[in-house]
Image (cartoon, rainbow, N blue to C red; front, side, top):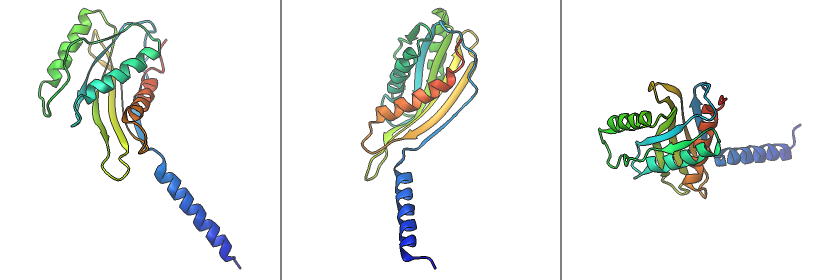
Length: 183
């Protein structure tokens, strides 16, 4: 015969497991195989598209990506100097801005470009207001314009965690995947 205390322990274990599972931050990342990239090559961080309702989310993600890319010590890294951030929702000039930035990078004889898009950059509505970020990154061969690698991901954090921290973790994870084969 099974004792009632056994059922109580199983029930407690199930409750604790469920509670812990619900508290863990959620992350989803997908990416292609890392390309073989030259160490010491010149890089540029091009404008990130902002597909959110959060003003300047693209600029914020660019700044994080630039800092993390510089920390990889893979070569000289520049940031596109133009003020090209999408300011208004449904701005139809995004592809033109990207073409202009890539043309500038060619003039500078840059080898690789990092660009991307921000799809989510906010605190979720609710009691806890968890931070959530969604980012897509691309590594582009500047001379040909070909995309060598792309990755996308979304991450949410704890209610007391900063949105910039969640985004930094996500962008770091994506960059590690894209830069895994730098020689």
